[in-house]
Image 1: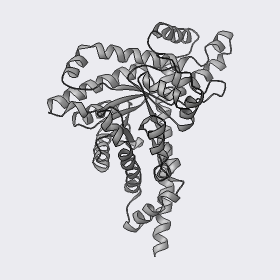
Image 2: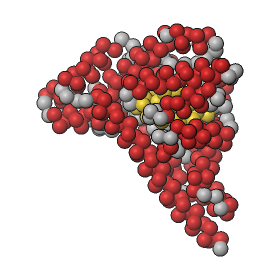
Image 3: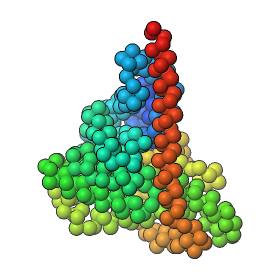
Length: 372
């Protein structure tokens, strides 16, 4: 069952799990995926934690203690999530050590409601970095415009960063520039660059969902022919940009000083349209030095029937650009698509965090009432 996953790792793809919960930790499920299914990292987001924590039972003892201490909701959320992430970092620590710090990483996101406040994002990143206190941690910062200086500032302080919610090629270029700025500043500050890590989370399937809806409204045969092509084309062009960054003089100087590249990470890799193969956002984006973070269902689909090529990224750039050009000719506004997706992504994470905070506030209040 793991032959396809082995082929994926042999091609240079790091397999990360896009999920975390207290139950997954206590049951040993995460450890089993690491030991048996080539999982070498974990990503989380507000929606994942909202789903996990509202399950309640595995968190009951800690929630009861938090209520007894009288902590507020924000601090309770930080305590619950950092507990899980710290534990996951410990599970992944052997991978971190074996790969000399390349993999074995676990991500925790700053409160998404701070995405448009640079100073607050930096402060929250510092607090999470201190609270988890593990070298294999990534702090996730959204790639919204106000997040770019926060990315550079945190890297400059020696905080490893996962830049999330990237949809557009323009934004990705800005993210790479922010990464280079931050690493250069870290070098000037005397930080050890070898252990300072970063990935750029480029979202995939949501692009097809949005573009396909617009193509369906157009309703022509040419529009139907382009369904399901935008997301992979977009990601492949992002990889081309990554290769260009690696060849540039700024990166070459940093690499010579011991820095490691900001690897592209393919996020949102579960298939939303059942008409498409359930492995397409994995097998069609295979190449060296990339991360693919996937929910367990997608991981198992790849393990069971994924046909993994040696490389499905390099050599595809001309065709990928042709896809975007044809979409533009049909009237699909690329800039409008990716701007909508970025705004919508932040809004959805905001809503998940707000819902979780509301439920947790009620639970804390009930627990305190029980004690009176």
